[in-house]
Length: 633
Ligand code: ATP
Ligand code: MG
Image 1 (spheres, helix red, strand yellow):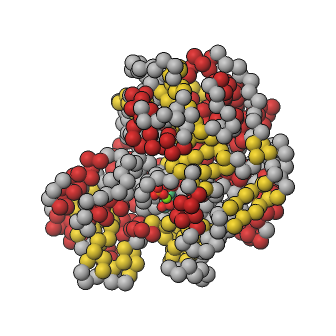
Image 2 (cartoon, helix red, strand yellow; image 1 turned 30 degrees about the vertical axis):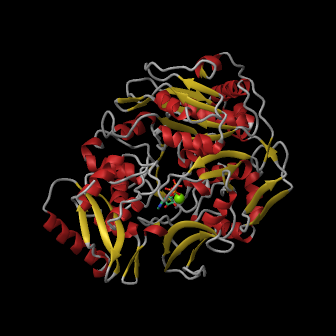
Image 3 (tube, helix red, strand yellow; image 1 turned 30 degrees about the horizontal axis):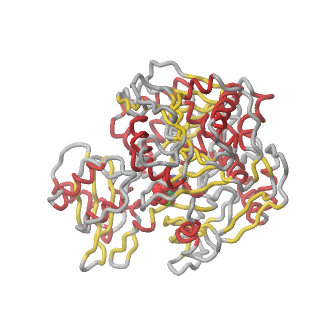
């Protein structure tokens, strides 16, 4: 594939070039796309605004690059293999030609309901082909998509629809998740009663559930598409026209409506995809994320399609009909690159090896991880039992705001180091700062992770509130994008993410990262998963509170003694937890991340205001933990 790095020497050379002359570097990558008009200026920027523009003056449509561009050469190649919820239901394969036709049909449907360039369209859909088609259909006509994960509640959906002032909503009658059917349209209806901005609701049919259709507003999507033309010219977009809005996971507070624009996002989605996964012609690639998250946007929809890849899209859940489903799918399609999250790996690891044993997994070449730090035990399990010690693991660090993977090994190129995301991709200039914002230029240091130079897929604003974007990301340190994460850089220049800055615990003046502590605790045989937070401590400033999920019942006394001993040897006496609480679940966002801020509140004994919990997966977990810690719910 074009612009793919092949060796460590090449990485070092390309990286150095990308820093010495970023504009020439990115212009060269951009040359391989199809443009309606080339750019006048590669980059103009200041982080004070912030005001960042890539490929100014250029005109293009990203869907021409995802679809039309491939038709002559690989029109009959599979673009998307859709694996349904039920293992016995036949899959759907869409070739590039078929996907192109469907995208045009849906784009025409959107147009017929008055959607024009610049309008916002909200997609609240299950992982069905229509969701991928809908994102591209929006992009085809210049509408801005805002995908809302279909696991969100009516309230969370209403907030996002109203924040973006969406004119049209796409949803489905139901969403199939394992043995459950979620009445998606009913939830959407509840939200819509608070959303006067919505004029039309297009409903895909996915279940046998009856759903109410409101006359004059609701339309069956399938029927409308069948009647629509398969020809839809691609709208001409400027490089910096908005492509989509996507709300962050809400791990640290109220979700932010991150805005990505067209040309830069396109260039970086492609470049990062082909390099991090080392995708080769005819490979089968699978990212298990939901399109409702940034990972799904960049590495299910845009990145793979820009590269002309064949990629799997999965509707169901990893544990149904049993915990071997991921591996069954890997074997079924002979998946070559597999990309998932630590939360899924830990969950499957806890179910036992009998769910892995029946599968060969011999097609796998590259394994990926994203979303949270991957602890060493999970890394080793993934490496040994899934990768059979043959597949490099790419631990990819990035954010909704960064649009694409920022720090990651390149498989078979970068020397791996478990729990380290290792090196920045070419064009990415991360740095570590002390609390005053001074750059820590040496290696073997720890600090706040920031980025000191723009990259093509960085966020441009937070929707409707540019000041929030400035405050959250660009005000903390002058001329730097601040990530909110803390990191370490080892003597060789490898980065390790040590957790969110808000989560760092300060014990008697020693700063401890949550990831580091959890990494050690999780090594204990009996521990399935853990979350560590700090709480006010009279003597030490902050004490360490560990919430743990155990594999089987055990004595509290023995558990405490063993965990303290383990931490004592692995990190040191300073890091020994003051309190250890066994719980049956941890508060997680719907994308599977631990919301430590809630645990921090509970640990400090203050549960009066838990902040924004709209993205919490299971609120009952919080009640249980409150009860366990404070004796009250
Ligand atoms: P919010 O910004 O609303 O609090 P969020 O940060 O969870 O939500 P995302 O953009 O989905 O929203 O997640 C990005 C964050 O996930 C990163 O800032 C980092 O904390 C964490 N993360 C992602 N990938 C990795 C990784 N490979 N290693 C460590 N942490 C990671
Ligand atoms: Mg974040």
